[in-house]
Length: 228
Length: 237
Image (tube, rainbow over the protein chains, first blue to last red):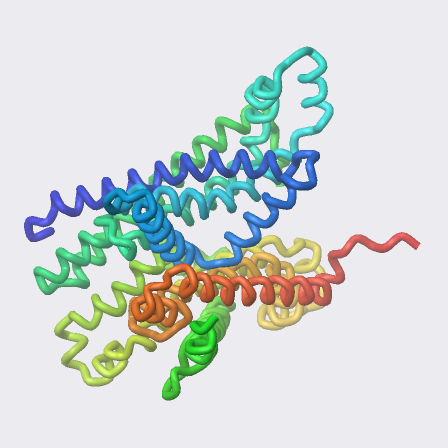
Protein backbone atom coordinates (compact mmCIF):
# COMPACT_ATOMS: atom_id res chain seq x y z
CA UNK A 1 0.00 0.00 0.00
CA UNK A 2 2.93 2.33 0.72
CA UNK A 3 5.00 1.14 -2.28
CA UNK A 4 7.91 0.26 0.00
CA UNK A 5 7.97 3.70 1.62
CA UNK A 6 6.64 2.45 4.97
CA UNK A 7 9.96 2.71 6.81
CA UNK A 8 10.65 6.22 5.47
CA UNK A 9 7.21 7.43 6.49
CA UNK A 10 7.60 5.87 9.94
CA UNK A 11 10.90 7.73 10.31
CA UNK A 12 9.23 11.01 9.26
CA UNK A 13 6.39 10.45 11.71
CA UNK A 14 8.91 9.83 14.49
CA UNK A 15 10.64 13.14 13.63
CA UNK A 16 7.31 14.97 13.79
CA UNK A 17 6.37 13.39 17.14
CA UNK A 18 9.81 14.11 18.60
CA UNK A 19 9.69 17.69 17.37
CA UNK A 20 6.20 18.23 18.79
CA UNK A 21 7.08 16.84 22.23
CA UNK A 22 10.37 18.71 22.60
CA UNK A 23 8.78 21.99 21.46
CA UNK A 24 5.90 21.39 23.88
CA UNK A 25 8.39 20.96 26.70
CA UNK A 26 10.18 24.20 25.82
CA UNK A 27 6.90 26.06 25.27
CA UNK A 28 5.50 24.99 28.65
CA UNK A 29 8.72 26.04 30.35
CA UNK A 30 8.66 29.45 28.65
CA UNK A 31 4.94 29.69 29.37
CA UNK A 32 5.42 29.13 33.11
CA UNK A 33 8.22 31.71 33.22
CA UNK A 34 6.23 34.17 31.10
CA UNK A 35 3.10 33.78 33.22
CA UNK A 36 5.15 34.33 36.39
CA UNK A 37 6.56 37.49 34.82
CA UNK A 38 3.05 38.63 33.91
CA UNK A 39 1.64 38.28 37.43
CA UNK A 40 4.85 39.48 39.16
CA UNK A 41 4.76 42.72 41.10
CA UNK A 42 7.43 44.32 38.93
CA UNK A 43 6.39 46.74 36.20
CA UNK A 44 9.45 46.00 34.06
CA UNK A 45 8.83 42.25 34.01
CA UNK A 46 5.13 42.77 33.23
CA UNK A 47 6.01 44.96 30.26
CA UNK A 48 8.57 42.59 28.79
CA UNK A 49 6.12 39.67 29.07
CA UNK A 50 3.30 41.72 27.54
CA UNK A 51 5.52 42.77 24.63
CA UNK A 52 6.55 39.15 24.04
CA UNK A 53 3.01 37.75 23.94
CA UNK A 54 1.58 40.59 21.83
CA UNK A 55 4.36 40.49 19.24
CA UNK A 56 4.45 36.72 18.91
CA UNK A 57 0.71 36.17 18.85
CA UNK A 58 0.20 38.94 16.29
CA UNK A 59 2.48 37.41 13.65
CA UNK A 60 1.87 34.12 11.77
CA UNK A 61 3.95 31.22 13.11
CA UNK A 62 5.29 30.45 9.63
CA UNK A 63 6.58 34.00 9.18
CA UNK A 64 8.27 33.90 12.59
CA UNK A 65 9.75 30.50 11.81
CA UNK A 66 11.35 31.76 8.59
CA UNK A 67 12.41 35.04 10.22
CA UNK A 68 14.10 33.32 13.15
CA UNK A 69 15.54 30.46 11.12
CA UNK A 70 17.23 32.64 8.48
CA UNK A 71 18.22 35.46 10.84
CA UNK A 72 19.77 33.25 13.51
CA UNK A 73 21.88 31.55 10.86
CA UNK A 74 23.02 34.90 9.50
CA UNK A 75 23.86 36.35 12.88
CA UNK A 76 25.75 33.17 13.69
CA UNK A 77 27.69 33.54 10.43
CA UNK A 78 28.64 37.11 11.33
CA UNK A 79 29.73 35.90 14.74
CA UNK A 80 31.83 33.02 13.41
CA UNK A 81 33.35 35.30 10.75
CA UNK A 82 34.25 37.80 13.44
CA UNK A 83 35.75 35.12 15.66
CA UNK A 84 37.64 33.72 12.69
CA UNK A 85 36.25 30.19 12.87
CA UNK A 86 34.52 28.15 10.20
CA UNK A 87 30.78 28.39 9.50
CA UNK A 88 28.50 26.55 11.92
CA UNK A 89 25.31 25.31 10.26
CA UNK A 90 22.33 25.23 12.57
CA UNK A 91 20.71 21.83 12.68
CA UNK A 92 17.17 22.25 11.26
CA UNK A 93 15.77 20.03 14.01
CA UNK A 94 17.24 22.18 16.79
CA UNK A 95 16.11 25.32 14.97
CA UNK A 96 12.62 23.86 14.62
CA UNK A 97 12.35 23.02 18.33
CA UNK A 98 13.69 26.42 19.37
CA UNK A 99 11.41 28.46 17.09
CA UNK A 100 8.22 26.46 17.71
CA UNK A 101 8.95 26.39 21.45
CA UNK A 102 9.57 30.13 21.47
CA UNK A 103 6.39 30.90 19.47
CA UNK A 104 4.03 28.64 21.42
CA UNK A 105 5.60 29.78 24.68
CA UNK A 106 3.64 32.99 24.13
CA UNK A 107 0.35 31.10 23.84
CA UNK A 108 1.17 29.03 26.93
CA UNK A 109 2.05 32.22 28.81
CA UNK A 110 -1.52 33.48 28.31
CA UNK A 111 -2.98 30.09 29.28
CA UNK A 112 -0.97 29.85 32.49
CA UNK A 113 -1.55 33.48 33.41
CA UNK A 114 -5.29 32.89 33.53
CA UNK A 115 -4.81 29.68 35.50
CA UNK A 116 -2.42 31.31 38.00
CA UNK A 117 -5.05 33.92 38.80
CA UNK A 118 -7.66 31.23 39.50
CA UNK A 119 -5.80 30.08 42.64
CA UNK A 120 -6.73 32.34 45.57
CA UNK A 121 -3.82 34.56 46.65
CA UNK A 122 -4.57 33.74 50.30
CA UNK A 123 -3.48 30.14 49.77
CA UNK A 124 -0.12 31.25 48.41
CA UNK A 125 0.34 33.64 51.33
CA UNK A 126 -0.57 30.81 53.70
CA UNK A 127 2.14 28.71 52.10
CA UNK A 128 4.74 31.42 52.62
CA UNK A 129 3.59 31.97 56.18
CA UNK A 130 4.21 28.33 57.15
CA UNK A 131 7.77 28.75 55.90
CA UNK A 132 7.66 27.27 52.37
CA UNK A 133 10.14 28.51 49.81
CA UNK A 134 8.87 30.07 46.58
CA UNK A 135 9.45 26.84 44.69
CA UNK A 136 7.66 24.79 47.34
CA UNK A 137 4.63 27.10 47.11
CA UNK A 138 4.63 26.61 43.35
CA UNK A 139 5.12 22.84 43.50
CA UNK A 140 2.68 22.05 46.31
CA UNK A 141 -0.04 24.69 46.14
CA UNK A 142 -0.11 26.59 42.86
CA UNK A 143 0.71 23.89 40.30
CA UNK A 144 -1.72 21.08 41.32
CA UNK A 145 -4.62 23.49 41.55
CA UNK A 146 -3.99 25.63 38.52
CA UNK A 147 -3.55 22.63 36.20
CA UNK A 148 -7.30 22.00 36.30
CA UNK A 149 -7.94 25.47 34.92
CA UNK A 150 -5.02 25.38 32.51
CA UNK A 151 -5.82 22.01 30.92
CA UNK A 152 -8.46 23.11 28.38
CA UNK A 153 -6.04 25.81 27.18
CA UNK A 154 -3.11 23.38 27.15
CA UNK A 155 -5.17 20.89 25.15
CA UNK A 156 -6.04 23.58 22.62
CA UNK A 157 -2.44 24.83 22.31
CA UNK A 158 -1.13 21.29 21.93
CA UNK A 159 -3.50 20.57 19.05
CA UNK A 160 -2.43 23.79 17.30
CA UNK A 161 1.24 23.03 17.98
CA UNK A 162 1.04 19.53 16.48
CA UNK A 163 -0.50 20.98 13.35
CA UNK A 164 2.12 23.77 13.26
CA UNK A 165 4.92 21.20 13.15
CA UNK A 166 3.75 20.39 9.60
CA UNK A 167 5.34 23.69 8.54
CA UNK A 168 8.92 22.76 9.53
CA UNK A 169 9.46 20.94 6.24
CA UNK A 170 9.64 24.46 4.80
CA UNK A 171 12.82 25.16 6.79
CA UNK A 172 14.42 21.96 5.57
CA UNK A 173 13.51 19.33 8.12
CA UNK A 174 12.64 15.83 6.88
CA UNK A 175 9.41 15.46 8.84
CA UNK A 176 6.23 13.59 7.98
CA UNK A 177 5.13 16.11 5.32
CA UNK A 178 8.53 16.15 3.62
CA UNK A 179 8.85 12.36 3.37
CA UNK A 180 5.27 12.11 2.11
CA UNK A 181 6.02 14.70 -0.57
CA UNK A 182 9.23 12.95 -1.60
CA UNK A 183 7.49 9.57 -1.76
CA UNK A 184 4.64 11.11 -3.76
CA UNK A 185 7.02 12.75 -6.22
CA UNK A 186 9.03 9.64 -6.95
CA UNK A 187 6.01 7.36 -7.36
CA UNK A 188 3.81 9.92 -9.18
CA UNK A 189 1.04 9.36 -6.64
CA UNK A 190 1.11 12.61 -4.67
CA UNK A 191 -2.54 12.41 -3.64
CA UNK A 192 -2.09 8.98 -2.12
CA UNK A 193 0.94 9.88 0.02
CA UNK A 194 -0.34 13.27 1.19
CA UNK A 195 -3.52 11.47 2.20
CA UNK A 196 -1.43 9.01 4.20
CA UNK A 197 0.26 11.94 5.96
CA UNK A 198 -3.15 13.51 6.70
CA UNK A 199 -4.40 10.25 8.21
CA UNK A 200 -1.30 10.02 10.43
CA UNK A 201 -1.85 13.61 11.64
CA UNK A 202 -5.48 12.76 12.35
CA UNK A 203 -4.37 9.74 14.36
CA UNK A 204 -1.89 11.87 16.33
CA UNK A 205 -4.43 14.57 17.21
CA UNK A 206 -7.11 11.98 18.05
CA UNK A 207 -4.76 9.98 20.30
CA UNK A 208 -3.62 13.08 22.15
CA UNK A 209 -7.27 14.06 22.62
CA UNK A 210 -7.85 10.83 24.55
CA UNK A 211 -4.81 11.46 26.76
CA UNK A 212 -5.97 15.00 27.46
CA UNK A 213 -9.46 13.86 28.43
CA UNK A 214 -7.88 11.39 30.87
CA UNK A 215 -5.62 14.11 32.31
CA UNK A 216 -8.61 16.42 32.67
CA UNK A 217 -10.39 13.82 34.77
CA UNK A 218 -7.28 13.24 36.87
CA UNK A 219 -6.80 16.93 37.73
CA UNK A 220 -10.50 17.47 38.43
CA UNK A 221 -10.62 14.84 41.18
CA UNK A 222 -12.59 16.11 44.12
CA UNK A 223 -14.39 18.79 42.13
CA UNK A 224 -18.08 18.29 41.61
CA UNK A 225 -19.62 19.76 38.50
CA UNK A 226 -23.13 21.11 38.36
CA UNK A 227 -25.55 18.85 36.51
CA UNK A 228 -27.37 20.73 33.78
CA UNK B 1 16.06 51.85 4.10
CA UNK B 2 16.82 51.65 0.38
CA UNK B 3 15.10 48.29 0.49
CA UNK B 4 11.90 49.98 1.63
CA UNK B 5 12.01 52.39 -1.31
CA UNK B 6 12.58 49.60 -3.77
CA UNK B 7 10.02 47.10 -2.55
CA UNK B 8 7.22 48.91 -0.71
CA UNK B 9 4.80 48.60 -3.62
CA UNK B 10 5.26 44.81 -3.93
CA UNK B 11 4.78 44.40 -0.21
CA UNK B 12 1.61 46.47 -0.13
CA UNK B 13 -0.37 45.91 -3.29
CA UNK B 14 1.21 45.28 -6.69
CA UNK B 15 4.28 44.24 -8.63
CA UNK B 16 3.13 46.35 -11.56
CA UNK B 17 0.95 43.70 -13.17
CA UNK B 18 -0.97 41.63 -10.64
CA UNK B 19 -2.11 42.03 -7.07
CA UNK B 20 0.57 41.02 -4.56
CA UNK B 21 1.58 41.29 -0.92
CA UNK B 22 -0.73 42.64 1.71
CA UNK B 23 -3.61 43.24 -0.72
CA UNK B 24 -3.45 39.60 -1.83
CA UNK B 25 -3.32 38.37 1.77
CA UNK B 26 -6.39 40.43 2.67
CA UNK B 27 -8.24 39.31 -0.47
CA UNK B 28 -7.53 35.66 0.39
CA UNK B 29 -8.70 36.29 3.95
CA UNK B 30 -11.94 38.05 3.04
CA UNK B 31 -12.89 35.60 0.30
CA UNK B 32 -12.27 32.45 2.34
CA UNK B 33 -13.97 33.91 5.42
CA UNK B 34 -17.04 34.94 3.40
CA UNK B 35 -17.43 31.50 1.81
CA UNK B 36 -16.69 29.76 5.10
CA UNK B 37 -19.21 31.89 6.99
CA UNK B 38 -22.04 31.34 4.54
CA UNK B 39 -21.55 27.59 4.56
CA UNK B 40 -20.98 27.45 8.32
CA UNK B 41 -24.38 28.86 9.36
CA UNK B 42 -26.52 26.06 7.87
CA UNK B 43 -23.91 23.46 8.82
CA UNK B 44 -23.90 24.70 12.43
CA UNK B 45 -27.69 24.40 12.57
CA UNK B 46 -27.34 20.82 11.34
CA UNK B 47 -24.50 20.11 13.77
CA UNK B 48 -26.51 21.36 16.76
CA UNK B 49 -29.65 19.53 15.64
CA UNK B 50 -30.91 16.57 17.64
CA UNK B 51 -31.42 14.68 14.38
CA UNK B 52 -28.53 12.24 14.19
CA UNK B 53 -28.66 11.97 10.40
CA UNK B 54 -28.01 15.71 10.14
CA UNK B 55 -25.50 16.08 12.96
CA UNK B 56 -23.18 13.12 12.35
CA UNK B 57 -21.99 13.94 8.79
CA UNK B 58 -21.23 17.53 9.82
CA UNK B 59 -19.38 16.26 12.88
CA UNK B 60 -17.29 13.96 10.70
CA UNK B 61 -16.44 16.87 8.39
CA UNK B 62 -15.31 19.16 11.21
CA UNK B 63 -13.39 16.32 12.85
CA UNK B 64 -11.44 15.61 9.66
CA UNK B 65 -10.64 19.22 8.87
CA UNK B 66 -9.82 20.30 12.43
CA UNK B 67 -7.67 17.22 13.02
CA UNK B 68 -5.24 17.78 10.14
CA UNK B 69 -2.92 20.72 9.38
CA UNK B 70 -4.11 23.30 6.85
CA UNK B 71 -0.74 22.99 5.10
CA UNK B 72 -1.39 19.29 4.46
CA UNK B 73 -4.93 20.07 3.24
CA UNK B 74 -3.56 22.63 0.81
CA UNK B 75 -0.92 20.20 -0.46
CA UNK B 76 -3.59 17.55 -0.90
CA UNK B 77 -5.76 19.86 -2.97
CA UNK B 78 -3.01 21.69 -4.88
CA UNK B 79 -0.45 19.00 -5.67
CA UNK B 80 -2.52 15.92 -4.88
CA UNK B 81 -5.83 16.39 -6.68
CA UNK B 82 -4.27 17.74 -9.85
CA UNK B 83 -2.13 14.63 -10.10
CA UNK B 84 -5.20 12.40 -10.32
CA UNK B 85 -5.85 11.26 -13.88
CA UNK B 86 -9.64 11.52 -13.55
CA UNK B 87 -9.37 15.20 -12.60
CA UNK B 88 -7.21 16.03 -15.58
CA UNK B 89 -9.61 14.27 -17.95
CA UNK B 90 -12.61 16.36 -16.96
CA UNK B 91 -12.21 19.80 -18.46
CA UNK B 92 -13.97 21.86 -15.76
CA UNK B 93 -12.01 20.24 -12.94
CA UNK B 94 -8.79 20.51 -14.92
CA UNK B 95 -9.31 24.25 -15.36
CA UNK B 96 -10.18 24.74 -11.72
CA UNK B 97 -7.40 22.77 -10.06
CA UNK B 98 -4.66 24.02 -12.38
CA UNK B 99 -5.01 27.47 -10.84
CA UNK B 100 -3.12 27.86 -7.53
CA UNK B 101 -5.44 30.64 -6.35
CA UNK B 102 -8.56 28.47 -6.75
CA UNK B 103 -6.96 25.61 -4.84
CA UNK B 104 -5.89 27.95 -2.05
CA UNK B 105 -9.35 29.47 -1.68
CA UNK B 106 -10.94 26.01 -1.70
CA UNK B 107 -8.58 24.72 1.01
CA UNK B 108 -8.89 27.87 3.15
CA UNK B 109 -12.69 28.01 2.88
CA UNK B 110 -13.09 24.33 3.76
CA UNK B 111 -10.74 24.74 6.72
CA UNK B 112 -12.20 27.92 8.21
CA UNK B 113 -15.73 26.63 7.60
CA UNK B 114 -15.01 23.59 9.81
CA UNK B 115 -13.79 25.75 12.72
CA UNK B 116 -16.56 28.32 12.26
CA UNK B 117 -19.21 25.58 12.20
CA UNK B 118 -18.02 24.30 15.58
CA UNK B 119 -17.99 27.82 17.04
CA UNK B 120 -21.51 28.61 15.82
CA UNK B 121 -22.85 25.19 16.78
CA UNK B 122 -21.54 25.71 20.31
CA UNK B 123 -23.31 29.06 20.52
CA UNK B 124 -26.56 27.63 19.13
CA UNK B 125 -26.48 24.75 21.60
CA UNK B 126 -26.02 27.14 24.51
CA UNK B 127 -29.09 29.25 23.66
CA UNK B 128 -31.14 29.73 26.83
CA UNK B 129 -33.91 27.14 26.98
CA UNK B 130 -36.47 29.73 28.06
CA UNK B 131 -35.97 31.76 24.89
CA UNK B 132 -36.74 28.78 22.68
CA UNK B 133 -39.69 27.83 24.86
CA UNK B 134 -41.08 31.36 24.66
CA UNK B 135 -40.74 31.41 20.88
CA UNK B 136 -42.57 28.07 20.66
CA UNK B 137 -45.29 29.39 22.97
CA UNK B 138 -45.83 32.25 20.53
CA UNK B 139 -46.40 29.64 17.83
CA UNK B 140 -43.33 30.45 15.75
CA UNK B 141 -42.53 27.96 13.05
CA UNK B 142 -39.14 26.26 13.18
CA UNK B 143 -37.86 28.53 10.39
CA UNK B 144 -38.98 31.65 12.23
CA UNK B 145 -37.60 30.34 15.52
CA UNK B 146 -34.12 30.07 14.01
CA UNK B 147 -34.32 33.30 12.02
CA UNK B 148 -35.66 35.54 14.77
CA UNK B 149 -34.55 34.03 18.06
CA UNK B 150 -31.74 31.50 17.91
CA UNK B 151 -29.46 32.77 15.13
CA UNK B 152 -29.39 36.50 16.01
CA UNK B 153 -28.48 35.71 19.59
CA UNK B 154 -26.14 32.78 18.85
CA UNK B 155 -24.12 34.64 16.21
CA UNK B 156 -23.64 37.52 18.62
CA UNK B 157 -22.53 35.27 21.46
CA UNK B 158 -20.11 33.58 19.03
CA UNK B 159 -18.44 36.92 18.26
CA UNK B 160 -15.42 36.64 20.65
CA UNK B 161 -14.56 33.13 19.42
CA UNK B 162 -15.18 34.11 15.83
CA UNK B 163 -12.73 36.99 16.27
CA UNK B 164 -10.07 34.48 17.30
CA UNK B 165 -10.82 32.40 14.24
CA UNK B 166 -10.41 35.44 11.97
CA UNK B 167 -6.97 36.12 13.47
CA UNK B 168 -5.98 32.47 13.11
CA UNK B 169 -7.17 32.53 9.50
CA UNK B 170 -5.17 35.70 8.79
CA UNK B 171 -2.09 33.90 10.07
CA UNK B 172 -3.01 30.77 8.14
CA UNK B 173 -3.07 32.67 4.83
CA UNK B 174 0.74 32.71 5.01
CA UNK B 175 0.89 29.15 3.64
CA UNK B 176 -0.65 30.37 0.37
CA UNK B 177 2.78 30.74 -1.23
CA UNK B 178 2.91 26.93 -1.41
CA UNK B 179 0.39 27.20 -4.25
CA UNK B 180 2.42 30.06 -5.81
CA UNK B 181 -0.12 32.71 -4.76
CA UNK B 182 1.83 36.01 -4.42
CA UNK B 183 0.71 36.83 -0.87
CA UNK B 184 2.69 38.81 1.70
CA UNK B 185 4.96 35.93 2.70
CA UNK B 186 5.67 34.99 -0.92
CA UNK B 187 6.82 38.56 -1.54
CA UNK B 188 9.01 38.41 1.56
CA UNK B 189 10.57 35.14 0.39
CA UNK B 190 11.24 36.57 -3.06
CA UNK B 191 12.83 39.70 -1.60
CA UNK B 192 14.91 37.52 0.74
CA UNK B 193 16.10 35.46 -2.22
CA UNK B 194 16.96 38.62 -4.18
CA UNK B 195 18.72 40.60 -1.45
CA UNK B 196 19.88 38.02 1.15
CA UNK B 197 18.69 40.40 3.84
CA UNK B 198 16.50 37.94 5.69
CA UNK B 199 15.83 39.95 8.81
CA UNK B 200 14.59 43.00 6.94
CA UNK B 201 12.68 40.99 4.32
CA UNK B 202 10.77 38.82 6.79
CA UNK B 203 10.69 41.49 9.50
CA UNK B 204 8.78 43.86 7.23
CA UNK B 205 6.22 41.14 6.46
CA UNK B 206 5.94 40.31 10.17
CA UNK B 207 5.34 43.98 11.01
CA UNK B 208 2.56 44.22 8.41
CA UNK B 209 0.90 41.04 9.71
CA UNK B 210 1.13 42.45 13.23
CA UNK B 211 -0.56 45.71 12.24
CA UNK B 212 -3.42 43.86 10.54
CA UNK B 213 -3.81 41.50 13.52
CA UNK B 214 -4.04 44.40 15.97
CA UNK B 215 -6.52 46.19 13.71
CA UNK B 216 -8.73 43.08 13.52
CA UNK B 217 -8.60 42.66 17.30
CA UNK B 218 -9.62 46.31 17.68
CA UNK B 219 -12.50 45.95 15.20
CA UNK B 220 -13.85 42.90 17.01
CA UNK B 221 -13.65 44.70 20.36
CA UNK B 222 -15.76 47.49 18.89
CA UNK B 223 -18.20 45.00 17.37
CA UNK B 224 -18.53 43.19 20.69
CA UNK B 225 -19.16 46.45 22.48
CA UNK B 226 -22.00 47.21 20.08
CA UNK B 227 -23.61 43.82 19.53
CA UNK B 228 -23.01 42.22 22.91
CA UNK B 229 -24.44 45.19 24.80
CA UNK B 230 -27.18 42.93 26.16
CA UNK B 231 -24.58 40.79 27.94
CA UNK B 232 -22.77 43.68 29.62
CA UNK B 233 -23.16 44.04 33.37
CA UNK B 234 -25.59 46.90 34.02
CA UNK B 235 -23.88 50.12 35.00
CA UNK B 236 -24.34 51.33 38.54
CA UNK B 237 -26.31 54.55 38.70
